[in-house]
Length: 187
Image 1 (cartoon, rainbow, N blue to C red):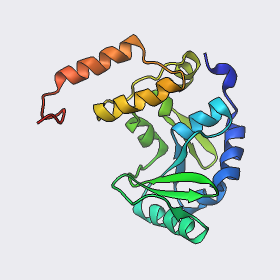
Image 2 (image 1 turned 135 degrees about the vertical axis):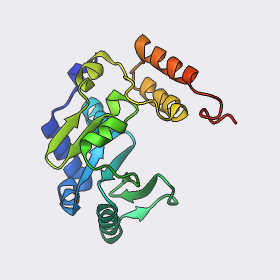
Image 3 (image 1 turned 180 degrees about the vertical axis):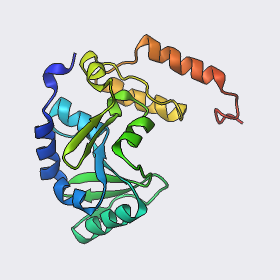
Image 4 (image 1 turned 60 degrees about the vertical axis):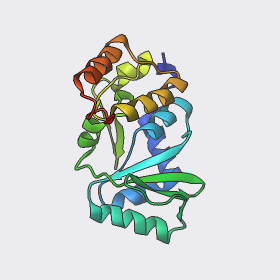
């Protein structure tokens, strides 16, 4: 369904280097771009919201903060438990406070197969089913650890033309049925 829109990895690397100076950021440590921004570039040739940056450690995170603070980045949101947001060169950049040892660990943690895409230094990492789901317009459930957040994010992908498969709907239903009210946050 979406195959004709898919841009090359080379295009995406150049795009993010031009947009946020990614080559320079990757010299600070293990810093990677992941998720929706990459999919947006492959679909639309540009991002439609923000760029999510992830890193492997507190040390790399601190280096990223220093880089943005010392190179014209402006905090645009109060710090929270999840990210620190910067406006930098007219782009919103979210630096995650959750660290991943590797791109593969990030991919394991993703809710959706379509979000399980990473640019780390010169390499792209994908969930094994990423391309088939992308081409078929299917979101693909990868991890149901936080069901309410999962449902909110499904709406974003629906707006971009992606849908859940019947099998994924059954996975969600079965998972929710296996939880008690406390686990669902209802008590």
